[in-house]
Length: 174
Image 1 (tube, rainbow, N blue to C red):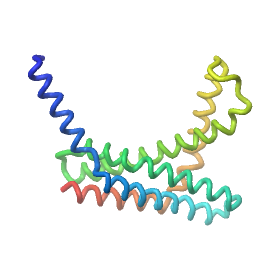
Image 2: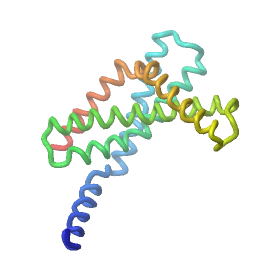
Image 3: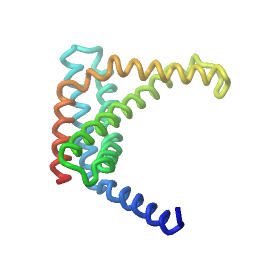
Image 4: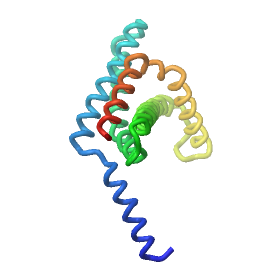
């Protein structure tokens, strides 16, 4: 490829990335709304299950809210990047998948960090071979535990909000 074609290709890629970045207003407002919605989803489910103590309910609700707040701009960016110039159905699917993956992934990651910090007291000294194995397996167990126990906290309210956000995104992209 000639340098001129490489430069033109690089320019198209950078232009596509620039167009995918959400405005600060959209990112902040959306992240706030998404955090409140996902936190409320967890809160409602925990209350309906008559779960643990109020302090633990607050911690889990905050975990879901912070994970959602961090995930919204990333999910929105990914959805915009994937769906540029595509039809309504593609934009809807992109938003649905990207927002769901970002929200679940970042919330599970925060859960894994909290889980790891709890068990760190009993782990080997940092950066040893044993510590690396303990770190990897503790993180994997935390992610597995989140998938088994945490995903249900997104239903039904979080799923309805995901559907609504995907419709909003697809209509905005037209």
